[in-house]
Image (cartoon, rainbow, N blue to C red; front, side, top):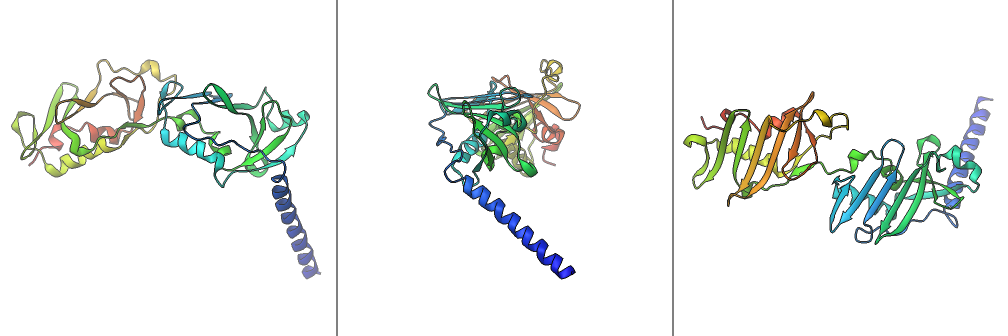
Length: 298
C-alpha cells in the first residue's frame, strides 16, 4: 500500500511540474511581454514613480544623474541590458481590469516605469506585486488590460531602492598621477609631496615608501558605503570641516578635494564642486586622512 501511494504521489508531482512548464512556455509563445531594445544611446530618461521613493534618471551626453545626484553608469547599463538578456521571461496571467488591484498593477497601487529617448516614450509599464512563490513581478503596459508575470533581472532591478542607482565613487585617481596630498585634521595640517628620491613630509621629513603607496592606492577607487537620509542632511556641517583631504597632480592641479564631518557611525563626505553627500566608514576615513605620524619613515 505504501509503495502504491508513493507511485501515485510521484505521478501527481510529475504532472504538476509538467503543467507548470507547459503553462510557462505556452504563454510565452504568442502572448508575451516583449521589450524594445534599450541601448544606452537610445535611452536618455528613466522615471520610476513609486510609493516610497520616486526616481528620475536623466542622461546628458554620457553622464547620468538620479534625482539630481551622480548616477552609477554601471548599474544603468546593466539595467538597460536586461531587456534583451536571457533571464527575461514572461507569461500572460490575466486579461481583465478586474485583476489589476489584486495584482497591484492599477494606477492607485502600482509603480509606473517610463523609459524615454529623444523626448518620446520607448516603454511605459505598470509594475505590481510579487508573483507566486515570490517569483518575478506582475507587469502590464499602460493602456493595456493584459497582465504578465515577468521574471529575470529586468523585473528585479526595477525594484531597487534609490541608493542602488547612485554612483558611490568619490575618486578614481591613479597613484602615478598624484604629486602631493594635503591632510587637515582640525588644526593639524601636513603635506606629502613627490620628490626625485621618493616622498617627503612637511618640514623635510622622509615618508615611508611602503605606507605612502598604500595611502595613495586608496584614491584609485574611493567609494562610499552609503548616503544620508533626508532627515540627516540638516545636521551635516562641513564649515568648518573636521577633516579635509586635497589631492593634486604633479603640476599642482587639484584632482580631489573632499571635506569630512563625523556622523554617529562613520563620516559624511562631500567633494568640491558637488552638492552630493556620501557616507564613509570610519576605517576608510582614517586611511585617507591618517595622522602624520603613520606615514613618516622611522
